[in-house]
Amino acid sequence: MLDSRPHRLRRFHRSSAASRPELDAPSNLAEDLRFIRDTMERASAFTAVSGWGQVISGATALAAAAVAAQQSSAFGWLRVWLAEGIVAVVIGLLACTWKANRRGLPLFSGPARKVALGLAPPLVAGAFLTFVLFRAGLQAALPAAWLLLYGAGIMTGGAYSVSIVPVMGLCFMLVGSLAVLGPAAWGNWFLAAGFGGLHIIFGFLIARRHGG
Image (cartoon, rainbow, N blue to C red; front, side, top):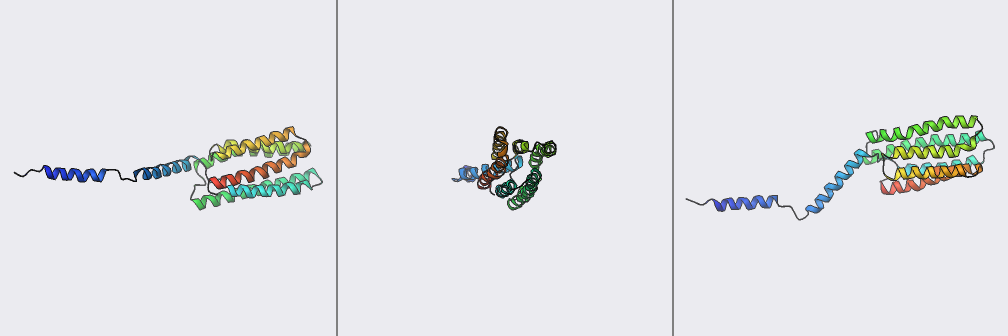
């Protein structure tokens, strides 16, 4: 009777060779882990924040500060900054849409809704406070209020975005705190430093680290 052990041994060696990890398995594992990490980050964080959009918004804010400084009335100064706020919102929405479409990111995902819900309440409060403070003749308090509320909104909404966004919100709140303590005549330039300078600096950082 023929011995079947050699056949079994050959089959064992073939199956062992087929199941043996390849030499480049560590690199494949690293790629798989990177893919999983990127997928989880996209699912749990709003990554469509556009750094270049913030740079453009910062540039328009610096231009608005220069124009606002030339106004002869408080109402003229307010109109310039309100117009800048509308321009900044439009730029931000268009830039986020462009980045999301270019990189295949979800624009209306769960994290995006969380960012909006965290950002909206301070901005709505700021709109009403703008009306109240200006009507009461306290327009000198507007720069500090805008910076603090915007920074608070960026911090709370940015908790669902990339990690650098809440840091930017904290910096806005610090500039707003300086506006509270500083001379009222410097309010326009605190706005330039916050909405202009901080947007440009953090916009470049976001664009460099997070793809645009």
